[in-house]
Image 1 (cartoon, rainbow, N blue to C red):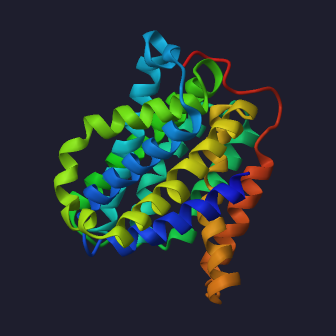
Image 2 (cartoon, rainbow, N blue to C red):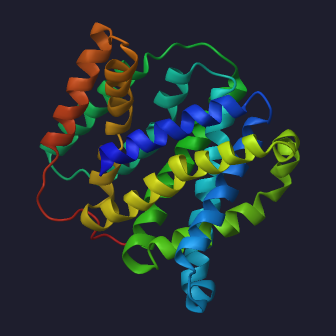
Length: 272
């Protein structure tokens, strides 16, 4: 499921990059949220109970944090090399995984994964300070996505919660719509926007809800390291992009780290 999620996510990212030429990065992120909300609401038709009480507050917070994460990351990659932005953003899941590490084996697995992601990302210390701040903000939001996503998966309304959350996120971040003017004048661009939302948000985030039910939040955070690995495999198979030696070693380190993580009991027993 994680590999399928990664394939869908990066296909949607390719569409998003194409839209940067006609809309601001933040505007593209808002379109992604809007399209996801529209598709999920039409599909799930959340019951009235999903729009009231604790379930609504939890879903709304999750939606705003997730939408904010996407906005911050898009702004970061507009100012930094993609590898640098990816490595900085991954500090969020690493911190979550670190708090869930209970044995030396877990700590070693975490170090392997962190080193592997840095090698895969090909970090270069260049770019603007503002870009670094955006990437670190995206990292914090990614940690929030894991913590809140776990609560939505376990105690909320699951995918119904996603629908409600993205609807709330779309409304809260609606001022960003001013950066999307050119898209509304082109049916083709609107179709691309919906496709981006489905591939980059609806499919991967729905799969995340399934995985979060089966894995604790720390293990889920480590599994996220498979995303850059998936991107590298796709590049090799589809685009004939042969990985460098550091990238190949980084991929092996990530796979080894995820495999080494203690299966044991679920690691989400502590209150979130």
